[in-house]
Image (tube, rainbow, N blue to C red; front, side):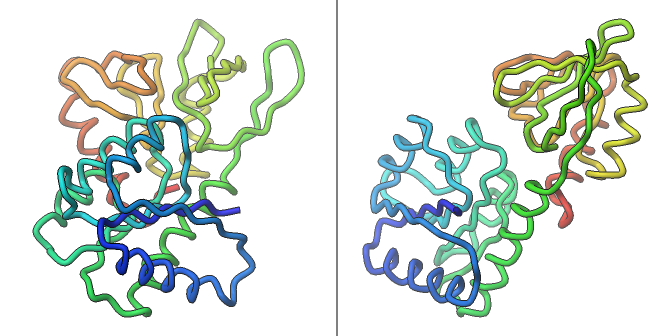
Length: 244
């Protein structure tokens, strides 16, 4: 089931956006649930409390807080949620894409424009859900893991530790280069090395500093003179139309 949030301070706009979404899903097989918010702070409270949405349909200009700032708060918890901004102003379009927005629609939008934005969001969701890698575990056995659930790899001698979003750490006997080659075939450009012995999922990166990157509260060292190159790889991936 797809969990969709609609956040707009105008109740009539919430009804209009929901109607557009219901029309979009009329002839599709997806099961959909909706949560609506006419107060941006109530939406922030919901995500702070752990509510997860697949798609967020978000106004930008709301009392007390901009939708782009709401999206930044959302990104602290979930890098995979698809965000579609729906607004009367194009002033914040650049800011919208720094928080990995799926699309940016100007009101009043047509059903066709809305459908295209939703097609894009659904495509990204399906790509993430279908992309998997097989890991042969230390001690025997295999694990089939979704790419989206992998935060980063950490090399410890001949062992590669796989850190997952759940907090689980798996161990596999593979070199960092071997796993990078595999991932490049499955999810091109999504994994990059900030420093020797580490390979990180760019979709999971929350902060990039000159000497470290932060993923799920963990600071991973960023090699000297790698800051600019890593930043470029990050933005290239985030603005790619084929991201997983």
